Image 1: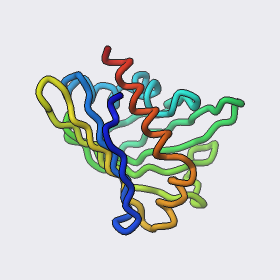
Image 2: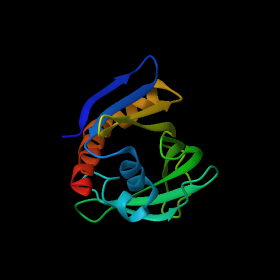
Image 3: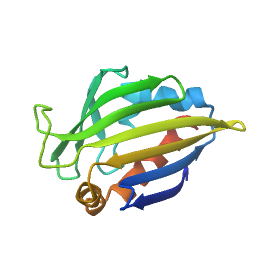
Length: 160
């Protein structure tokens, strides 16, 4: 399994996930840059994602929904802040309503995804920062650690 570590820090207001992939940085980058590949790894297996809009460029927006086992949809969006292809991208990640307008009842986080060469493979570091302890605790209570692990672990299937 690619995910090697998940840590949350309620004082620093961060969730950090580390993963190792047996593929070069460019291949891992392509998964996030291509909406059809992103769909295969963004949600956990039981909540597959559908990417509606995908503009992975500064100022761009990515919108998606995940469909639960009983058919319910969970909407979200990214506002892309910075891109350093193929090494990293930074975005705000938020929950959304069905029309992809922000759901301000739930927290918005800032995410930095970084990909570094490690031998023939890639070391990926995903750092998510929250504005408050309550925001981080909300997503922890929603199961973000296990959901992220199972979602990211799906990348192995794409690169095999």
